[in-house]
Length: 329
Image 1 (cartoon, one colour):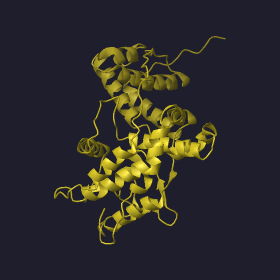
Image 2: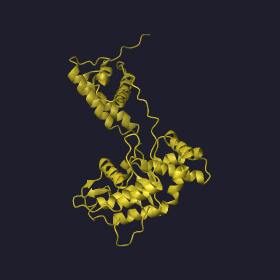
Image 3: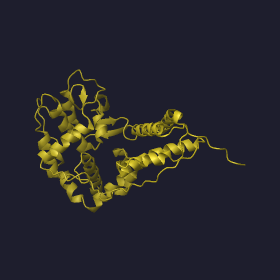
């Protein structure tokens, strides 16, 4: 019995195809936001490139290679997104599309920057001495608390900036992170010192701030963005005498999270736990999709970072300064 002929993909129906595809992806738990832009760019390309309503099988291949100014990584990502869509359409009986095979080799030489105790002391001195600025009246209060949260609890910056008053349970010293990278909620435990710092910070917030509004903002109505925090982080490095060694060498804001993870692994090792047996625990805490992402911290801990994190552990009590009742952080 011969196979049924496959249906053509029509340019005039692309919006409908893409809408169904995005709904399918989101039904699996994916956010699928940036990918939508790629689909729209492809639709625009097809409308401008082809006079006929039927998309040729080589359209994706030609589009991905059309702009040589795009990096290899961007082309690889684009090809991956379009490949997923092409497979989806093929499963529904539509024509097969030609997809470019673009491999983007991972930079295996990259090693996260693990902050030393002396580096962190310099950072705390810098952020604790941020001067109030009229145009950013809350910046000097929120940055010290935010950096301590990133360092002592290890959330992603996007997760930290989404925290609201409603997410914080001081009775149990737990922050509930909502709709994280994998579109799942998870708990973020705090030590007493971090909880006290956060409580003091919230006590200084204006009464008109809604309980469902993000707690980290630089002025009323304008919450911090990852970009603005990264800019402040780079400024903090400079003022703290910590050299920035380049894009692939850092330090990066995300290295607070790396330092937290390695410190946690080192602590488990010191307590006598088997690091590989403990991987699922830390993986769940960090919100990783699987233990493969967490496993690299085991290698970092075992290979060369024990002495560094030992130094950090000894200085943990100095992370959170004593706060007087009338003092703002």
